[in-house]
Amino acid sequence: MDFHRYDHRKADGRQLYLYSRETRDYRVTNDVEGPYAPNPHLRWHPLRREWVAYNASRNTRTLNPPPDFNPLAPVAVDGYPGEIPVTDFEIAVFENRWPGFAQLAVGLGEDDGPPAKGVCEVVVYTTEPSGALHDLPVDRIALLLQAWADRYRALQAQPEVQYVMPFESRGAHVGVTLPHPHGQIYAFPFLPPQIERQARAQMENQALTRLVHAPDPALVVEDREHTVALCPEYARYPFETWVLPREQVVAPDEMSDAALIDFAHALKRAQQRLDRHFGGTTPLVLWCALPPKGFEGSWPFHVQLWPMQRGENKFKFLASVEQITGVFLVDVLPEDAAATLRAIDPDSAG
Image 1: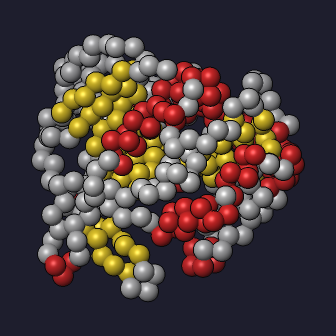
Image 2 (image 1 turned 90 degrees about the horizontal axis):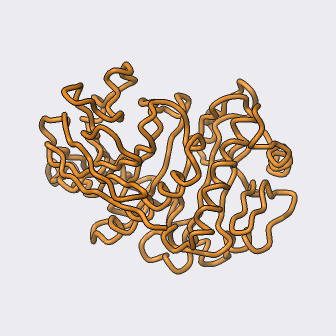
């Protein structure tokens, strides 16, 4: 499916990308101005053997602004400046004003660790100030998948980038500070240990491949022509759902039009099922699982949904034992979760 991308350099030097299904014109006005000189740096944790990223300016980032000052909304002519300085758009991607990683980073000195060079971007799904990804039309979700793939290819090509991760945090219980439907993309200057461990395991045991080609029927939530949605038997969260294309691809840009639309349908319906079950907007983490650099031939693209809820008005908070040890305690068996979700009609009114 064709799409169009319009590139714009913002007033403070950050890059903005506007994605649309058809070629269109934009009226640029009322951009956010001001200094933009992020300087995050890394420090090595000798016991955990992993990097920690620091950027003190992130402590001043926008927190739950009133609707009239929504920085992710399209701007009005002569109105309040916003991060997306156009009067209308379909999907917008821009460099984060308060990044954990930044291309401009130079570090604070040898004693403070190396600069945290990388890229952090914000992905805005719609001009609507409220709602969720599954409220979007299927074609808009397909366009989002294409935008993820486009940014993945561009960022993955940068020499300092080792891993590109589109994701979404949804709901106040996950720490969201802006309710406007959006996600983010992090381009890491290193391969996070947890991601490397999973990528190497997939090379050895082909767990993701087996999920697609020989899924346990008791774990399948929805079986489609080009896509399968299921609750993995080793889920760490109650009602955790994975959406996987049947044909292994590096990114959504390798899918046929039919497979792309089918996947968009499956992703939409998977989130609708969660909201139907929990009776409202489910707080969750969405991980767009794309291959790390060097693992493109073995790691298949898919999307994982981690709900932070285990029942109506019962939220999943990481317990101390989970945070300290990394060992998860799960209250709902994956096969029971799959049966519950499978029985829900995503198209029902309630």
